[in-house]
Image (cartoon, rainbow, N blue to C red; front, top):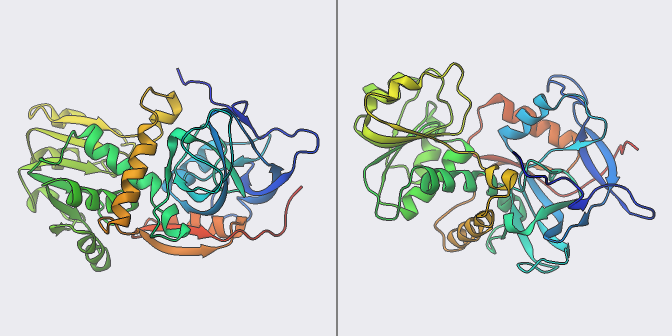
Length: 354
């Protein structure tokens, strides 16, 4: 059962004399080829619960999960704010906060149980937050949390690799946001040979720049190009089960982050291949005892960035946290051809809907 984490733990409900803020919201699941599928709104500025930070948003990024949540949300009685990545400045803290102070620059992916980051201010539990890298602009910092957390958890928590791990790691769709982070983490913190997939010359060049030892073409049969793989990361598993089982070693490990259509996991049985799921929001959704691991991971990522071991994965920067720019970001993500991340910086407001 999902632990309750509604807005009564820090609130967006209006109170007398409570100030309002600008945000980008949805009221229904509308395809991105329609106008105004997101709108500019004003909502009450949030007040913190005991473990909450109020963060003034400087930049956000757009992830595939934003578009998926938008299309699954349905009609909303009140504005639903998306956004699962942010960089900003702490402006207020709850009574029990110990890890941050007003004025701290932070980055985080937050929780899918609360209002998102496409707003002037956002509530976030301090345990999910890291100190932002000192060497990155907010736009580049905002591109990192969700993909870095997903990659880190997939590599270390699910696949169980360590600094001493060796063998072959196959990363499907290497130029995507999470794979772009995973390649860098694996190169910096393990002894694995990283093999990434890409189908376009520019994508292949991108993943090589991130540190992939080898690049193969996922538009052709992967089992014809690589074999004896110890670990596989997949963000697109549908229809590839037999192919992956063929190229993987007996008793190897697969981690996936997608939702396979009609999955054929029986393909992995004969080789006793372990299949793991990674979902970055699990710790926040269920308020697990190790929920604070996400803040610790983000601090490690920030340290890697500042030591030159992890580079920004930003590919496109849009100006203005408005419905117009967020809609453009959603459309770009849905095209599925991006290398790296789309970020939005600088808060500009217009056409506010009361």
